[in-house]
Structures are given as C-alpha cells and as structure tokens.
Length: 425
Image (cartoon, rainbow, N blue to C red; front, side, top):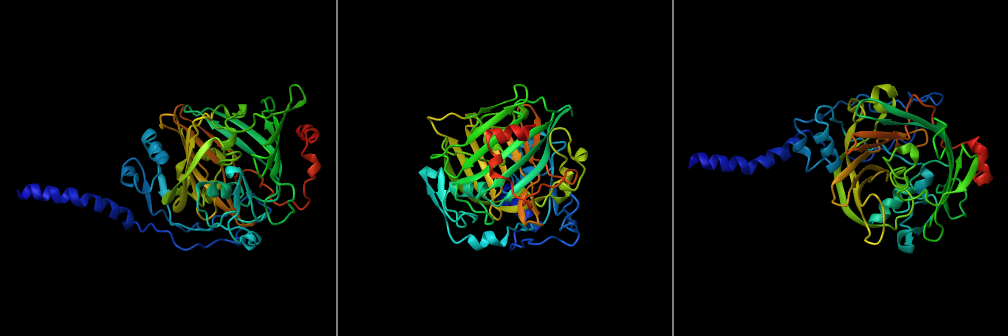
C-alpha cells in the first residue's frame, strides 16, 4: 500500500517537475530593447553586422535526449519533427531573449491605429507607411502586418540560393534584383501598389524563367498581380499570369511555391484564415553568429549547421490557413508564426490533405541596425519527404550588402516588359 502511494505521488508530481525544469532555466521574455542605431563595432563599408549580444552564453541546449520535455510547451510541431527525423544532428541552442527589433521612427509616427480590411481581406485602407494593424484582432491582420512590414524603399541587391541533398551534393544558384517598395514613409504612394520587383538569375544563366517582373497592388481583388518573364532562350518577354499561388519556379526544384517567397505573399482568397492565439515559442532570433559565418561552414547535410543558430523565447502570433473546399492549392494546410514585435513570419509549417506535416520552414532574424529594421538572413525550407532543404534569400558577410535605400531612386519607367528585357541582358 505504501509502495502504491509513493508511485501514485510520483506520477502526480512528474508533470510539475518537467514544467519546473523549463522554468529553472529562467527563460522569460522581458521588455523591448530595440537597437535603433548602429553599434560601435559596425563598419558601413563592410558586409558585416557584428553581434550586439556576443557576450551572451547558451542557457541550455535541446537535443535528442531532452526534446520531449519541451515539445508541448516551447517547441512547434515542425521543430519536434526535425528532432525525430534528424536525432543525431539536430539541436537548438537557447539564449536569453533580446527583443532587439526596431523600425525607423517615421514608421512609428505614422502608426495611429488599425487600417481597414476591404474586399474580404484582399485589400486594405490605411495610412501608407505605417504598421497597418498595431492592435491586430484577427488572422489577416497578422498576415498584412508581415506583408507590409518596413523593408526599405529603393532596393538593389543580390543573393545566392542553395538546395542541399542528403548525400551533401548541392545545387547552387544566384540572382540579382531591384525593387521599389511603396509602403513606407519616405516616398509618395498614390498608385495603390505594394511594390514593383525585377529579378534575374545570374548563375546558372540557362535556368528557365531567368528574369521576372512583378507589380503587386494593395488590393488583389480589384487589381490582381501582374507578372512577366523573360526567357533567355527565346529572348522574349511574355505575360505570366500563373506566377502566383502555388506556381513552382524551376529553380526551386519543387520545394517551394511562389506565394511562399518572403514567408507569404500575394492573394489570400484560397484559404480560410484563423487566429490560433499568441504563444511563447523558441524561435531563430538575433542570428548574427550565422550571418557572420562562412557559408561553407553552415551548409551541412539535412539542415544547416545548428551550432551557428541562436534560439530565443519569443511572443508569436500563430495563424492557421486551411484550403477552402472550392479552391485548389498544393498546400492544403499551413501554420504561420509571426513575431509579435517585428511582424516577420519566423516559422511556417505545411501539411497535406491528411494534415500530416510536409515541411518545416525557418526565417532567422537580425536587426539590420543601420536602417533600422528586422528581416530574415535566409529562408530555410526542410522537406521531410525528400530530406532535402532549400536556402534562399541568403544574406551573409560573404555577400555584398543589399542596399535598402538607394540615394538615387529607381526610375519607375524601368518596371515594364521592355525594361525587363533590358534588365535581363
């Protein structure tokens, strides 16, 4: 009888000990401390963004030996899947939470209140250049906050992409892009546009859809996305209405869709959107160490080298997207995790029609404190069926900095089919 009582007591208090273990490490989220100006070690003439938190120590590490202790409380289903599929290599180093994200003060000055959603969430009306929904109340508020977060003005840059196979072989490519972002406080926006983008593949040049022009409106219902592609084989520009939703560019090798670029973009009408709630989860954050590491050191089989990533406890707004019964998309279900401070999507998980997980995606953030703004240093997509992963939009000290606010603005007349042909050559 005594033995039975002892066992009963043990099983009753075991969950308390597990919960206490996570609290023992003193994981907590403090007040915001945005970095609004460059730190003293920053050199505007280099490609480097020195780590403001280089003195921070790892609080604890999650690996195959203990991930189940954190699975329900601190980890997402996609992270749990990473531990289960790659138990011998996947781990997460947890650091103190540093709520460092900032935006230009002009953005905050314009942010007075929530915008108004129109046309079933496909458009909005609000103060251009502001945070559209500083007090988000529904799922699409978080999606729009992500899409219209501050990302520069007149932009020029290039970045590589990699697809890494389980046997360590890889595909390498590179691209170059110019863009005008109209949702910002620094230029006039009377066109009803989010922005205009031209991009081209610079390596290897034989890839199909080598150059692309996209003009994105603020209302996909009234003015759907307009897109054109230039094919170097035919030397012709053609209209490309299919560059939307679940179109898969050839360079992506089937791993990601067009509307997964930059987390999520484009029309939202194929999904039913629901807000799950604000939760505290471990997210890739303040990834300066990764940014400052040679690319060759981080491209390991199955996933990037986790020794160079930093995870912090973050307030995230969790949004679910379920495909409508009368719509088509190759991703039937999606879960998105948006940083409550910067509005960036930091993680996405995709599910098939049976609600079995297909991919886990990460967007590690840093504060580009010379702007200031928080954006990801890459987009990582881990495909569980093939065990390949894709790394795109890579920003690193190995790569020239993207110019987020050119002194000489782009000529808007460049963003035409004829301009695309000139840009491609």
